[in-house]
Image (cartoon, rainbow, N blue to C red; front, side, top):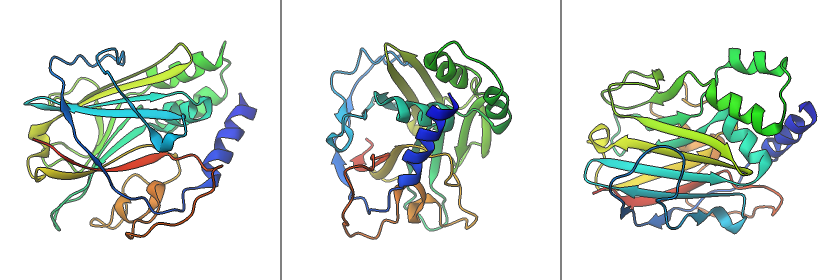
Length: 240
């Protein structure tokens, strides 16, 4: 297990120094969604950077935004289980921070305890990380307190993750009422958190948008080694 985690750290150490271009995404309607990390309701998931490591899709109905992720690469599964899948909604107002929603969120105490525990399998280890997450990490929602939010909360935020048949599945729901100050055209970042980049910058108005796990976004493209996995996508879309 320790050798495997070292390999995961090497993946993170590769970094993502390249700038990302916004991808335009049309969010289709998908009513009657149940957040259970099953994903059978989702017809198509997008292959991130055509690398075959992980896949995503977004959907919406009148009240909610839905997110689906399937992670197939075992090492990136470890990153997702240990550090979470992070949705960032970029603010379009100077006096507003970016919104962040992260799950799984096993805290440092859980991670330290699990390093000294034995697990029957790799699947059992990742499942334990997910199951022992005590809540969601949230930041920047106008009406939701920042920090750890209970899995059972009164704001309607919801996410589930599970490991099944060699893959990690994730599904989440964000009520549109919590995004009421976002214009119909929104910029979203969806990614596997690396565990090293601070979730929230010390500068209130300079969150991860200016760097961190997504690399500095300055509107230019740079070369990237094929050996570096893509851990995030930058999306431009409409939330109706």
